[in-house]
Image (tube, rainbow, N blue to C red; front, side, top):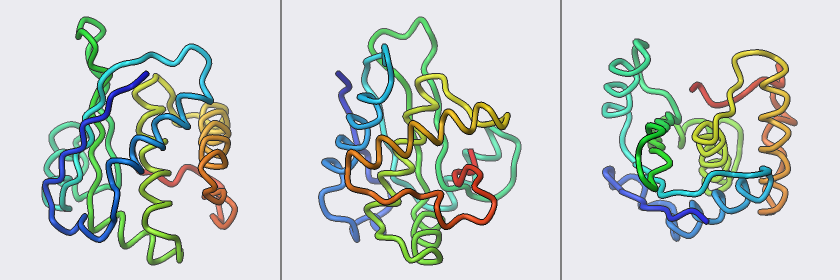
Length: 160
């Protein structure tokens, strides 16, 4: 079982009602799709593009904001699985550009970030296929359409 602490740092996120519930549902759906998912507390930071750009520069040496970043906790951290940060402007722009409900896009990115906290990655094609398959199944549990169907390259949507 995972506990989720949602921290709203940017008021732009007010456009989504029931954020904590949506995040908890996304984490539960992703966890249900993983054999031996590690439990723990997850902090989810809903921030703005400027703060995300700072995180992206400091931790990935990449300039500009990205949609989602995951920060797995150290193996020696008691009961803390890690942190997920999302940038309001990037996430809202992506949802609008793809005509997606914002709540669905948020849940997809939470599932994506949670999988990173569980050790999944998408750097190699075979890893991406595994990760995207889990994302699709988790989102289907939530009634969210396959986020990869309308993507030209079929590749991972999250920048992380």
